[in-house]
Length: 205
Image (cartoon, rainbow, N blue to C red):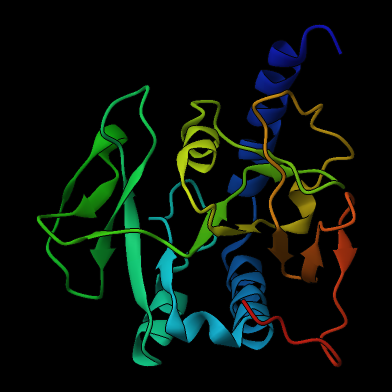
């Protein structure tokens, strides 16, 4: 695709509208399913440093999930934007942690410890059949994943209504390791998303 930037801009508008239109009852139901899938598929997250996000624009809210893993022994952190061109950094977050307003008015931890995440739980505006993520277009996660060493395991979160056939990935795009929706957990190891049989497979990370 020659004009992939214009195409992505158009898709973002459509997907933002589609997600905003999800009824509250359905959003709650789908979110509960996502939380359950992650708890069942990734039990070893209770020993990890987990990067999450503060939800905006009717995204799945990972904070209750984070609280669950904190209770099991995990450390969770929120992303902080240093400037427009740098990778994200992550600072520890827990329920009742001190919070201030960061870039775009999104809450960030205030004066908490910087954390190097083992795992990133990443919001996806849209995603495709190969596990590539469509975000809001600022490229923060792309820069972060390219810069972090060792690279953390990545779990993208979205709803099935936001699935696309192809986001037309570019050289800077990085496929996520796993995608979780209300319908299940998918792995991109083979180059294309494949559903994980939750009755047989527990992912050890």
